[in-house]
Image (cartoon, rainbow, N blue to C red):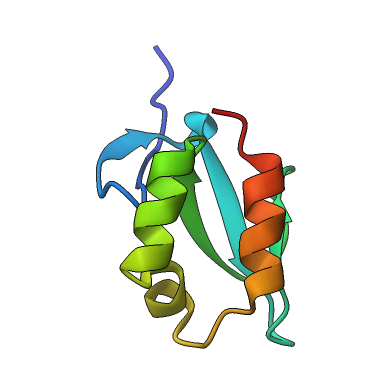
Length: 85
């Protein structure tokens, strides 16, 4: 049986299968984007496909802490558009 990697959601702080989470990437130029292919270069952070987890991550500044930089409101709006539940 193949081992499925586990990652921690920056919103709810629970470990889940990597494939069930959304990856957010900060590249060397400091641009933050959503990585649907999970192959982009850069520092990655993972979040559940859930609006509650996103709001927890925004409130606790989990995304800013993960990338050690200030996050623009535009990035949060892009995430809100991608998250389904």
